Length: 302
View 1 (cartoon, rainbow, N blue to C red):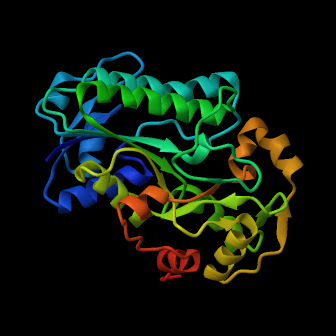
View 2: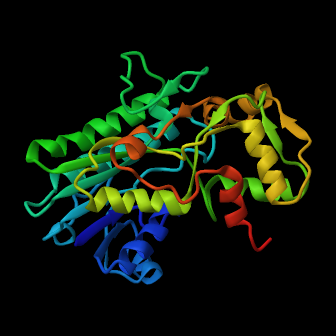
View 3: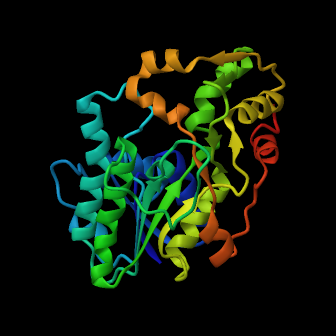
């Protein structure tokens, strides 16, 4: 398969490129710095600034699958109006331009999304059948509009998949930020620790993207989370055990809100999400369904 990937130098993207190359697919990448991306990943890459440029024709020529992983990091800094605009446009505008540039050869369009499409409050158990309300939070608006832009490709009879990703555990992302704190013995829960934290091991999210690109059964929104979500307090305690460090501290919600403003919702919201379609429709076999096993795998050399 000829596969075009955006966001390929990111946390998930690097692992996905490696996996697809091992499976003998032809990978091409779009990046703001194509030369650097090509050197880093060992695949052909084209320069693309989604804010000012259309998708290069040579990048999509004879392409069978597009995997769109683009998006500004939600966890970097306060959500000022300018920052929220960047976060939104990096997902919506890039997806719009990729859909508009889709060649006749395209079979599948796999696009990122997130569990932020769900309410993020209380004990409500959510799956892919959830209907997004008219009144939405910022995160819900991003994810809803992102998926709607991707869904436009279906008018060309191209299979579309939107991967609603939870917290990805691997050598990067949230663990990269938490590890130094926990190693110093300052790790702990955030808020009251009762909020649900839907997580997934990096190996499993990469497998889901690979399957979504190639398996015709995969369609529409898919919850990419492990089947056993945990509350934040349990997550903190399990991470402390994996790092062999005590867990005593808690960060009050009010302090996080003062420090991060609206962005504090990333840590304080509660998402009890289940991977219903992966388990019931696609019989996806999770390599890591248990949090302690997932962290033990990631920290087995520590």
